[in-house]
View (spheres, rainbow, N blue to C red):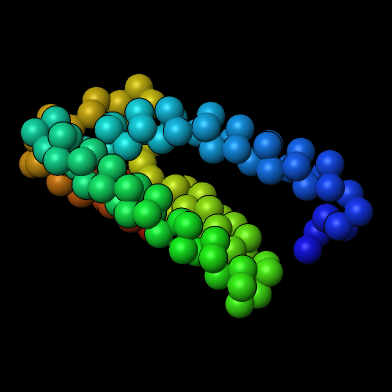
Length: 125
């Protein structure tokens, strides 16, 4: 689509850069996802996230087979899902230098506090 067929080296280079980015982001995603769950349910939350990741890896080859329908369909599917994931990650709370929730009640209290702070910001405008 964006790379001419005569420039095969460019397509391979872009594919390798994509693989590098995926590999590099895996560690960050793993660490960040554990910070989102309170301590008492961290194992269950990480297990649920891992299950979703495994389901995605099971479905991925079938999405790749959709190139028989349209040659660019797998690229658009994977690209749009990655873009949507990136956009959705912007709504995750910041955890730098903050006390992480130890229980479900702590997590709910932090959410209420965050909502209250957002309401205060909107009211001051």
